[in-house]
Length: 364
Ligand SMILES: [Mn+2]
Image (cartoon, rainbow, N blue to C red; front, side, top):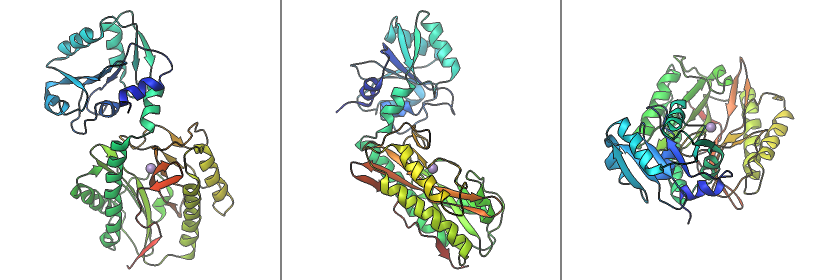
């Protein structure tokens, strides 16, 4: 089996002497460092992974994470104490490279400048496409980790009806959901979205101090990150009995999501799945109210590379893990979204978030 580093080199169109995965500060780490090293602990601020064809990845890490890095399977590790020493190590490893590949979508500019200073004659090549292509198709270890993250979200989703209380705020519900994710060993993969009533009309709404009232439709969109791998789910609830209007909006999205899942399979162009969803929704009273892509790749990052949208060049392949999440949004009224995380297979897609996706009516 190809190593992850080899997978990146196979996907590369321009040859390079090495690919450097370089982390910036705390919020600017490239999750590709975790991908190539296989480590699932630690932040690895300022650390690098040096990838060269035919060799094991060399992790150049700070002494703060040397012990964790040593657990990386099939990697060599060098630890540095200061940034000056890190630079000497990189020079020693790389010699006088002519072409260095970087992951342009996740490297900070100062690191690119540093490479140009360390290696005056080097040409920096953009290897982001190859990195993304490699990461899109998950290996067995990754599938298992996403599956576990999905299990957490499914389990927590099943608990949501018992959390609902009249007058509780969106923030209170979001906090309870996050706590349940933490109780299961994970953490929120992104800021949990909870919308009561009309607030559902904004897809990326931030929960506030809005109280839950009888009759409110509730949209909950959250994910768990467990051992660095993410899951993503959206489910709908009603606090009380659904009105015919709420039910109508829900049914359209439910049909669109089922239709999308039905045709999500290896060999299918992603944009055809999106087109199907748009056609279906646009044939209803909610025409034009589906205002985002149908889904996205998910893995070490919640948005892990490709997407299911009108501009997507992606063709599904076995091992891709995608979200499928159509929605309709009516400002002033509310919105509905239904989202699963799915594993693309030769013949169809396996739903990794199998908790019920009915409109769950919770006794108020
Ligand atoms: Mn999503």
